[in-house]
Image (cartoon, rainbow over all chains, first blue to last red; front, side):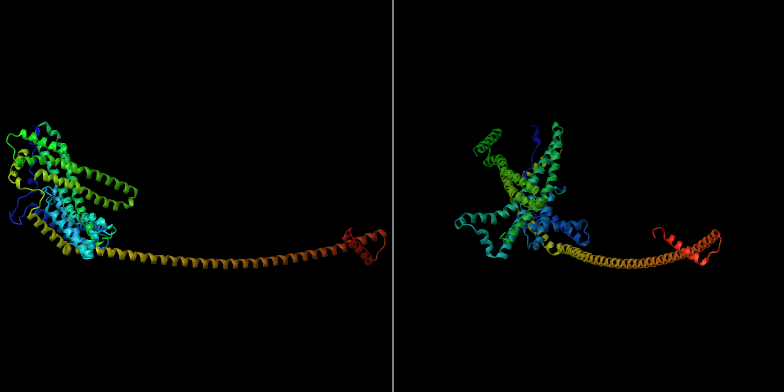
Length: 255
Length: 101
Length: 185
C-alpha cells in the first residue's frame, strides 16, 4: 500500500501537552498556560508601550492600541450594547486580545498551538460572559429580567407552556455552551486541518512518484495558514460581539 | 439511518475479517464510532452550509442595495454566521467525540 | 526520515491515548486560563487602558477646541469681510458723490462759459453789424454827395448854366432815395 506511511498522530499528541512543572497538581504548567501568559504579556506590552510614548499624533504601537480601543467601541459596543456600554470596554477589550492571541499562536511557528483549541479558555470566557450578562440583567432590572426573559410579554398564556422552556434553554443554557463550543471547535478544526496537511506534506516528501502531489499539499497548507489568520481575528470578534450583544440584551431587554 | 447502520456494519465486518485477532468490545465501539464520525460531520455540515450560503447571499444583496448600511449589515451577517455555524461546529465536536473518545 | 520521525511521535503518543479526551478541559488549564484572563482584565481595567483613554480624550478635546477656534476664526473672518465690504460700499458711495459733484461743477462751469462765450459772440456780432451799418451809411452819404456833385456838374454842363446846387442836391437826393428803395417802392 503506497499510502501506508500516512499516519495521523493520535489526537492526544496534537492537543495535549505535558506539564513543564507541577505535574499532577491543579497548577500544572504546560504549553497552553505559557500561551496564556504570552497573550497577557503581549497585550500588556502593547498598551504599556502605547502609554510610554503617548503622542498627540499616534504612531506605531500607540496607533495599534488606539485602533483596537476604537474598534471595540465602534464595532462591538456600539452595535452590541448601544447606549451605556462604555463601562464594559475594559472587559471586552481584554477578552478580544486574550482570544485573539490565544488563536493566532496556532500559526506562529515556534508555538503552532492555538490555546483556544483546548476547551479551558473558551469555557472560562463563556462562563464569565454568562455570569456577566445575567448579573447585568439582575442589577438593572432585578428579578423582572428573569421573568421578562422567561415569560416574554405579548404571548398568549397557554403558549407559555411551550415558550418558557425554549426561552430558558436558549437563553440560559445554550448561550454559554454555544459561545464556548464555537470558539473551541473552530480553532480545533483549524488546528487539525493544518496538522492534516502538514502530515500529508511530510508523507509526500519521499522518493516515490507521489512527490508530484507535494506542491498541491504545500499550497493548501499555506492557504489554510492564511485562512487561520482570518479565523483567529473573526472568532475573537464574534466572541466579543456576542458577549456584547448578550450584555446589551440584558441591559435593554425591551429591544 | 438504515443505510448508515448497514455501512457501519459493513465497515465493521470488513475490518473484522481483515484483522486476525478477535476484536474486543472496545475495539468494536472504536471502529463503528470512527466509521459513523464521518457521517456525523457530513450530515451536520449540510444545513449550516445551505444556511450560511443563503445568509451571505442575502447580506451581499442588501449591501449592494444600500451601500450606506453596509457596516450594519456586515455586523449582523457575522452574528448570523456565528449562530448558523454553531450547528456545524457541534457536528464537528460530535465527530471528535466519535472518532477519538 | 521525516516520516520516521512522525512515526516515532505516533508511537510515543500511544501510551497516553486511552486517557485523552480532546473535548473536556483539564483542571490546570482552567486554572491558568482563569488566572491569566483575570490578571489581564484587572491590568486592563486599572493600569493599561486609562492612560490610552486619557490620551484619546485629550486629543478629542484638542480637536474639539481647535475646531471651535477655527469656527470662531471663520466667524471673525466673516465679520471682517462684511465690514470690509461695508467700507468698500461707503467709499464707493463717496466716490460716486465726489464724481457727481465734480460733474455738476463741470456742467455748471461749462454752462457759464458757454453763456459768456455766447454773450461775447452776440456782442461782437452786434458791434460788427453796427459797424457795417455805419460803413454802409457813410458810403451811402459819400456816394450820394458824389453822385449829386457829378450830376449837377453834368447838368450844368448840359444846360450851360450854373444850377443852384442846393436845389439840385435836393432833387438828386430824392431820386437816389427812390432808387435806393428800388422799383418795389
